[in-house]
Image 1 (tube, rainbow, N blue to C red):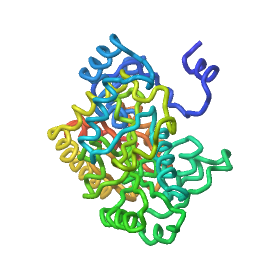
Image 2: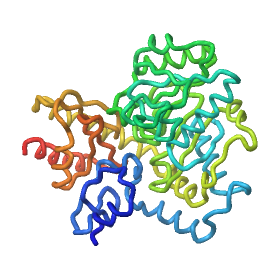
Image 3: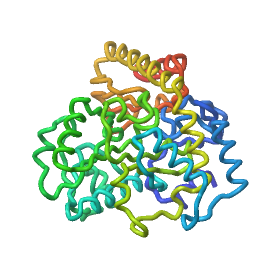
Length: 387
């Protein structure tokens, strides 16, 4: 029986998969079971930011898994404490709760905000946002297509429009405890919040004693050319959520909250069996050492701008390209046509990208790509346009 048939027989059919079976990854490349090589400009949807099977990450995993894989959070875990210290030091000096996925990191932020609110429970989110697939995070997600069929959702969430501060102000009342926002809406089609908007958002949150939560699950940890996306805006959130690229491919997430807020969750008020697992934390420590590096972040900034410039040249040539937008290595091309066929053509030519919102081609390459890789991707992309 083929893998295709086995998958259909034994696995929930919740993913519409491309008919490719990858068996090997190294750096910026993947190979399928037929030996075909692919340039990966998706990196597992913003996960493998240090490249596939990064030797330093692999070594950290092997070393830790040979000593201790799991003990539970009833005991102290050395790599977890070391990782929390590093995240605190490179962010705003807060405390960290570890979990396994972005949705769980946001669940923690939601629970923390509501408990901190002390009777205030409403959270303002944004239309076109995506915060996860649990019931609570679906409730916070401003795209009904994800929550269809799972109603009733959790009450207490209201939705404003990104970059429209008046739409936020209209929703604030004496029940509001927090605002949750993605600095760059990834699943929403790579939509960027403006500096002016986030500055105003910080101001009105402070004025009304409301927590500001940044969901940096897709856009954080070096992807914008800064270690955290919020550092591009010159403001600090009260809570930040991370996942995806944190573990270099292993499942780990983090919720970082400022001191004085983090303490609201006390003994027994939250937990995670596998959160802060020794092996995942060991991998994450190496990932942070790699990406929190001036040379790596500068490469993202310079090569990201080069990539955007090349895509803008394509926009001038092809009238079906509506807009090019992005920052660093999170980039989207909005089309006037369906993008799925172009994704398939790119795959056939050995380039991995994806399409979100039906018409937005999304690029999330590993942070190690260079201008030569961009040129190769642009060549394949243009060939796929004119097929």
